[in-house]
Image (cartoon, rainbow, N blue to C red; front, top):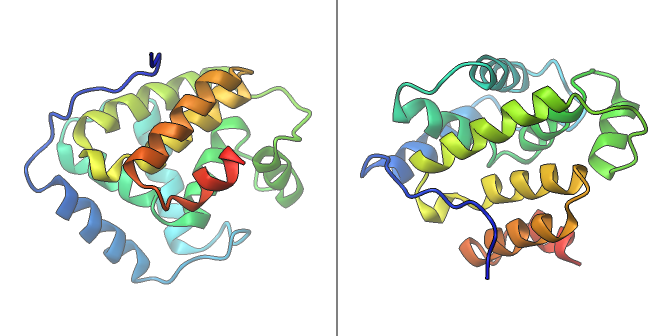
Length: 171
């Protein structure tokens, strides 16, 4: 029996295409290197996630844009790390992603991000949910909720059996 939250899809019929097109558009500026925090796409994605984290999603396209950023690996990793600690220090960033960060996560930021992820899920069709489930698993793992994290990773793999980071996390 699953204990994870899986909101019903309430988005538009063209949500998958919107996410796909946004991701293609965002990749038009090239894929940033994982530590290139000043790359234009990286800065825009971080700013958009920061703005929405404390606000509310008023249009399905906003949610699709936020989901689209998570399909770009270095941006997804940066957004995930930002949730725990938003410093631009490369060492701290790498520690956060490796689960070796010794500082105190910003729990209010984690809570706000988790709420945002659930909002995004409602506008995201099933076939595009793997990065969102993985992100929720990452946050659950950081909270010390390993069984819940494993459920989210399993859910990501059910949606997308080739979701590489979920495969790595599951092993």
